[in-house]
Image 1 (cartoon, rainbow, N blue to C red):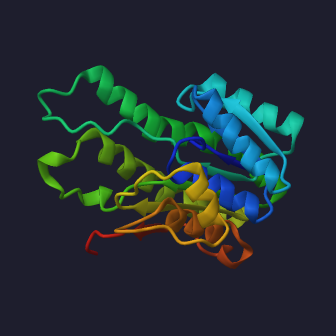
Image 2 (cartoon, helix red, strand yellow):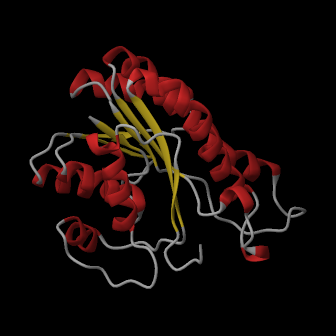
Length: 242
């Protein structure tokens, strides 16, 4: 059972959910409030013959995260794959213009949500001796060099995800649990039709990344072939220079 946060937008989370369903996983489709978009993703997953549970939850809220894991276990199965894709708002501003409430909200979505999802997932994964946790970070977030056109809080949150990944991975690998991050460069949104075509092997027009590029890395990290890959922050730069 795979739980994918931020799984109903036009980007990476949705493509990961569809790709894991293609690979045989049942899916918890997490979203915040877009019920119509969630219904479309649910229908797409069901068309692949997989079970699916849509669940509206703010993953920066502890009670909502606990309720989501409980619902997954009660209605489908225990969660053994977590993909932390939902993230904070991209809003480039000078530091003097950033509202403290916005700064806190971005870090809650990026870092606190990662903590809460790991906290909820790990006890069951340890008991079963198997688990996969993947966070979507950001390309070069640990040494952000993209100037004034980029925000300050967003890459700080992505770097926090990278830190949690690297720190917790060695502790959990003896339990059969891998923890990794994927660090994409700019990745444009695509339509659901194009996302499904890409999941099926079709090619998307590209100038850099597509959501499927990141989804394919996530599928590998969830596979048995990646059983000893842990603590990695894998760059998927797209058109960015390495």
